Image (spheres, one colour):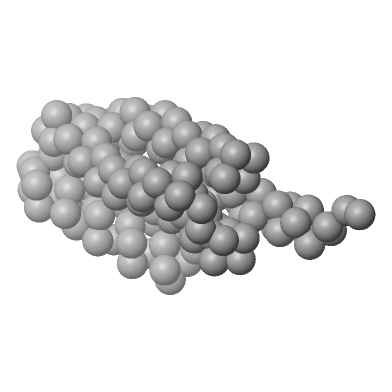
Length: 165
């Protein structure tokens, strides 16, 4: 006899994983964290096999790496473009605050706008402020591929857990 609850659990967690993958493509949206929470919920409901525990620990490490790499690459790109670290920190803070206030796109608008405005005020040159903004965008572009790859890896690990765990 088919155990429908297993199929329902798989479907619900898979949808959460896909929402997380979509979220991994949006700046300041915690897509990888959503995927991690889905895996955590799966573990509590389906049970923690040895393989599941090992895979979940690796997923946790990937979550931390994803969070750090995103901020580091965006900041490094902006810095390479000439942005002062004050502008970068302001962009990170405004990105988080405006994502909370106006989800999911508030941070996407606020972070680059912060870099541009602070650099324009600081340097009094729109061209240099624009260059800092472009550097931040390049850093984000790189982090986009990293987040997407880590998200795919987390989903593949969860699939392995489901079928082998």
